[in-house]
Length: 400
Image (tube, rainbow, N blue to C red):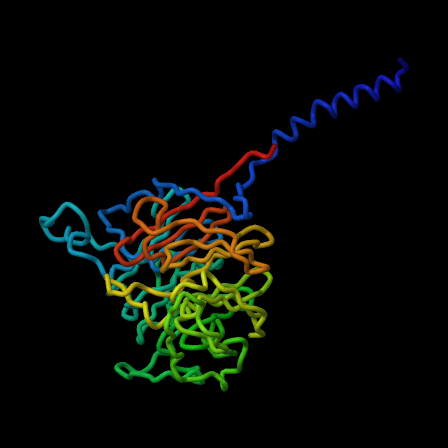
């Protein structure tokens, strides 16, 4: 065998030996079910118990920031006696006391920052709904009561700015979708750091304001209609017979979420229609997605919290967009069916779900918040009496 032939044999042997090694070193991928839906499993030991005997209360909002820290609202408006009866000297009971209403957790479930609550600031929201931590180191908190607005703080809780736009105290405003200066419900909002804008949904519209000055910029209604064409009349209820809601061009209250994808699509959830409307950031309507559309959405069969009968309605409570480069999936929190629906983001097709009604780990009871981190973990928050935050980790499988 000459030198050239020997070199060729050695090279082939190296390829033969190294190929299986390279295959074995490939990282695991997320497991999928037969329909292509990603699989998740609950982490029953996350997070760690809150310190200082703080009680866990209604988790109305969750946000995962650029450091993969988890921020959540610990709304204690419906705290029960045995959950906050540990005050006093000596304390009446061993557990617990009312804790801060804004909590930051690291990936291990430890508290990093915690602050806020009634009396923390004169304008503190009484009906907490949304918390967002931006890339510049500020935290935005908003509520849905008439005198609530959007407040901006530092990460350690120092007040920075008030969005304002409140109605006069005690004034009951009739629905007016053409009014943009005074708003009665500002708690369901989103910030667009790229354009320095705040998006707010209320009544039958989305409104966009300057993120630094609070000045109004633009707005639109259902399917992209101008503000001037939006009806101020209530959307009629319908008698549920097992079919989807009747067609409606207007946005159908309650509007429950607004999220913006990396490719600049705006997703708005209409709980009263089991629908997600998709727009450009300028308000051009693109398409509609329906989520469990045969679920009662409004009218007969709809109730409220605290065991009011009949049960709640609508499926589009909150939304998390997947964090892969293509943002392939939408994860929709459904507080009526107590499931997280998994949708293909391009087609809107429902691929699967996880959860189910109950209070065991991995089940859900009145889910009202959802977010995802860069590692693919999903965090859910529950209200009413469930009062917890849960972590669902991706199920991994080795690449053959």
